[in-house]
Amino acid sequence: RLLKTSRVRRIYFNWKKTVLITADIALGVYLFFAITAFNKLDDKGRICTKVNITMADSKPNGFIDNQEIKTRLEKQGLYPLGKTISQIKIRQIEDCLMSSPFVRSAECYITQNGQANISFSQLMPVVRVKAINGNDYYIDDKCSIMPNSHYTSDLIIATGYITPWFAKNYLAYMVQY
Picture (cartoon, rainbow, N blue to C red):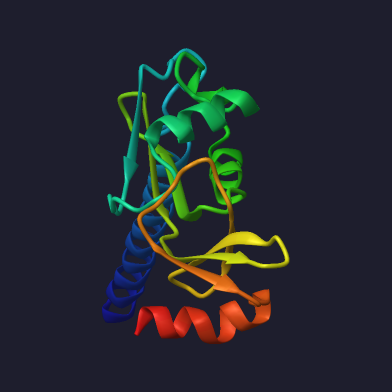
């Protein structure tokens, strides 16, 4: 009789353990699908209603502003206003902005309520070089050459026999000092 009771307990315990493991696996599968498949928003019908363009560093000597960003994106056909969320190419917007010689970093994302946020920071010129050989360019705060633009900036102007190598390796550091 003792042997029979112990065997029944083992069978009951194994059955209980099997039910608990099966319930845990079912719960895990449900949670996986709940997080991945059921949590996606319907991007097909939502339209971008607003575009927020913000400059991370609003310094007065910069060469690019919010209107310039908007114009650049419209010219490339990437401005997100009025497009459906699925049509907006966030990575291409960031790449388009980063291709500008005046942009240091760019970030774009879409919010849950259908607004596109574009944030960028600009390279800041520290000196303008007008060499005798006809070169006309700026040196930025990271000691890189920036092309001349239609903006003018209140900066020191270096003139004379200045090569781009000399401007990047010596002149930029002297001006920053």
